[in-house]
Amino acid sequence: MRILREGLADGKAGELFKAKELAVAARNAANMVAQQAFATAFEACAAVGSMPAFNWALIDQAIEKRVADLIAEKVSLTQLQQDGQRLQLEKRVKQLRALQWLFQISPSASVWSQWIC
Image (cartoon, rainbow, N blue to C red; front, side):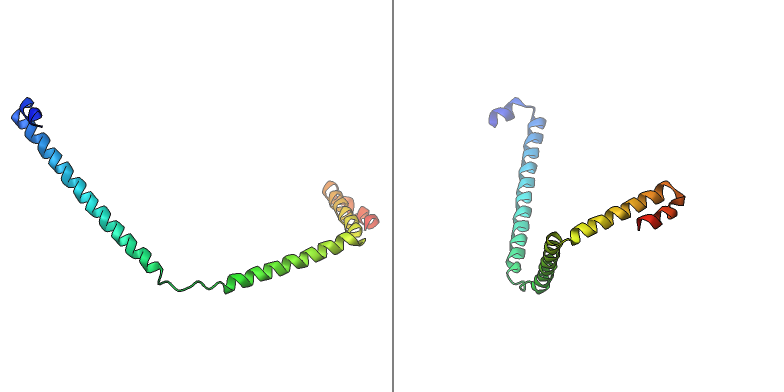
């Protein structure tokens, strides 16, 4: 440092050392702010332990209702696959799609609808 001081003009060396001192002071101030922020965050984390327990009852009820709905849907789909009701519904869907197509291509399709339905 002494060599640096001697190598520079008196005014420049003084300016550099003042800038260094200001930088060190700024770093120390930033460290103190960071320590205070850490202490505040730590106190906030400690306060989390005093929070009341969460009430899961509403969520549990919603889940139970959804499970019951899914079980009912599973039963109805299983029944639909086992008996001939599926074939009847497929036939009806095809009829309705054909009727829809007829109405789209021709305004006079109402005559044809008597033959399909």
